[in-house]
Image (cartoon, rainbow, N blue to C red; front, side):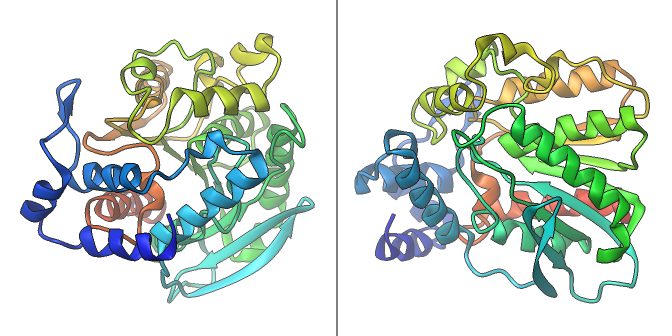
Length: 338
């Protein structure tokens, strides 16, 4: 999506819903859910533009394409302060909300992108929104991607980084007792497994914010087939991500890759799991909520039924996705500032 197309999309997504419906076409209803009109219109615009799928491109080119898409739909979002950091040798970015007190809660954020794509810039806009709307500090980490490294490298990096953050919490004005982990998609997967290990190690972790996390690399959930085509995230993308990050099939049921197979430790932090109705990862995310609840963990599910995978980054266009992200940020605020 080039700049002209992005401006066109932004303008169309600002139109009244009744006009968007005419442009989007007949409503799409699948698995008992209607696709949000804005989302349907955006998908139609992508088809008209004949934009190649990220997974169809060579990985370096795909990374540039995903970053460009993310920046265009994220827009320019205000926040109190931003500065780049280094944590455990990894690039990081710290966001402080306007009016932050000397000490307060902080979310440690792991970006999505199938362990292959994504970086601090691809998720800059949503991190700004989370920080400013929730009133919490956000520290985003940029782990090493695959295929440059494979499992368990990113997992190990994120654990080392979190352990250092616990020790250095004061450097960011963070209250150690109100540290949280969070992420989207592959980043949600990493946040999940970091939270599990934090509980085992006795490290402080007060909350988990898991946005459409991948929890089962075997792909057994029904939604993997129901929404495999036509809703942005495809089964080809998921297969590329899994096979690149975890090329040994024997690791697909390793709890560090698939937390749905984990033995949950005592003291695991409360969680908010967010799913999208038209997302191939929907069912495994919701299965993880059931697993947490069965294990005695406080876990809440929010499903946005008309949304697709990727809506979390769409804070700069339209109304529907931004409203959903605002609701997520409000839940984060309630969990960490109550």
